Image (tube, rainbow, N blue to C red):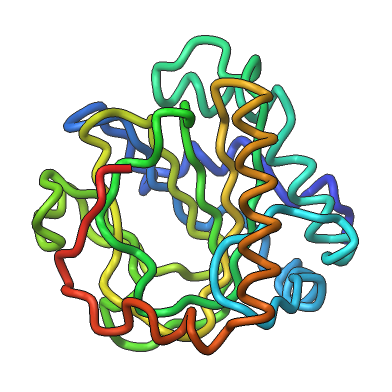
Length: 231
């Protein structure tokens, strides 16, 4: 299919799109990717052997995933997201793209995101999901209660999209899950310096997990369902 057809702003106007300003600005939108792109995006998603989010490297991905990321990081897309979240000129901020294929149970603890982030978008690419709440995104009203949902949880299925403005109370997370959970994350950052710092940290994390993957799997495997960290 034509890569230009991967993202269509009109899909945000679906009647089931949810935009809220309280307790923090966020949007949840369904069906944001065309069905005919499923096979290409599955083929072109990076085959990371380790769990976690890693900085986007076009060499890791096939052409369809790279085309999708290029569309997610345009100023036009940022402006559209900014209007939904009430953020002026979101396109002025540098973007950091990270991708995740696998998770360990330590991932998904409740947090707000760091103050270096202006907004964060998550686009999920999983063709199916088990009949469980584990691994499903939750926007929350409290930092110490994973069940304090302010909207229904979002299974990370193909084409599901969530974005939020980073605030001191933008609590989100998910129940512990281990296994494949494909997602593209786009973060609009406060500065190029923060982008460089986070990219370096992400590359180091990838190398560490490549060398010590078993330790990473064991760390935090028995975490509490309400585990949290501020950012």
